[in-house]
Length: 104
Figure (cartoon, rainbow, N blue to C red):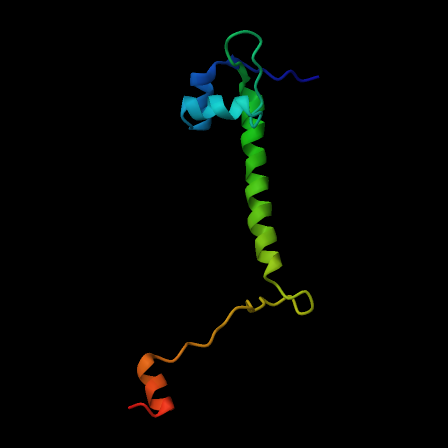
């Protein structure tokens, strides 16, 4: 049986570990975006939980960019599909209108 050592840390040390500003981390903790608990007046973090949370962000970022790339692929040929929709014609300039209408 292996034992994993962990350490409880405060908001300043946790912010340094995650490389974010302490105020940013405080707000993230309030919103429940990071693993944290507030047993009293201060937020408490477990270093291993923060590292696991940080690693999970890799998967989230990869899957978002991966799914965006997949959406641009043609489902039949698996080739990147051209974006369609919208108007691609350029409107003629005022001079061309006048020539076409015989005003010039």
